[in-house]
Image 1 (cartoon, helix red, strand yellow):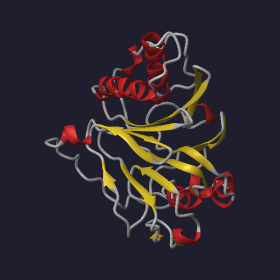
Image 2 (cartoon, one colour; image 1 turned 30 degrees about the vertical axis):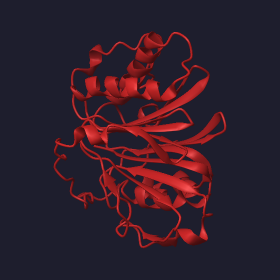
Image 3 (spheres, helix red, strand yellow; image 1 turned 45 degrees about the vertical axis):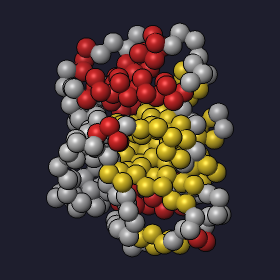
Image 4 (cartoon, helix red, strand yellow; image 1 turned 45 degrees about the horizontal axis):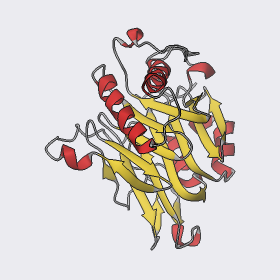
Length: 281
């Protein structure tokens, strides 16, 4: 399995603190040693950094950790390969253009019988079930909306319906963004937290690092962080249920189906410590 990290904010914000925790799970405090990637949106454009090496030993990851790139929407992923080789073309996140927007996708989980997913003219480059499912989603959107839609919340609700179909093939935890909205979809493990004034301190689980957000923000800042597992141990993270989706817009939760899943049980908890049993080469 892999781990996801996402951010939605109302002002350009760096994700250095959260990424510092995530990168340790890429081969140090976690077994996800088969590459990592991160995409930052900036206006209509984006910057993507990828490396098929473990993030805990990646010089590129160190650059991202220490260089405060500010963005309103970020998608990141650390990989534990189960489909496709360990190389750049199979490294998340994946980005494609649709309706004059760049869409970025990352997936945690494993699907069976995915080879029959029809992606139309949106072809995968690598060999992963993740990239093919992303291309399939975009093809479904093109079929549903021949012209650019105006109701983007409605679009993401339709995407959630498509994700329900993918969940029938296996574990499908997803982060998706068009640069303005950030969508989450959960099969078993996904958490989120929204930070707003009054801000306080936060301490990472995977690294001995504490930050006082009061010193790093303004009273009007709203920042939501999404992760496979909570990254801090002194804050309250909201846990998602199987089949739950959330839509964040500039840091605020604008739509979701949590209330409709009141009687759906949570998935079995994932062990917090999953340090690799074999040393990195």
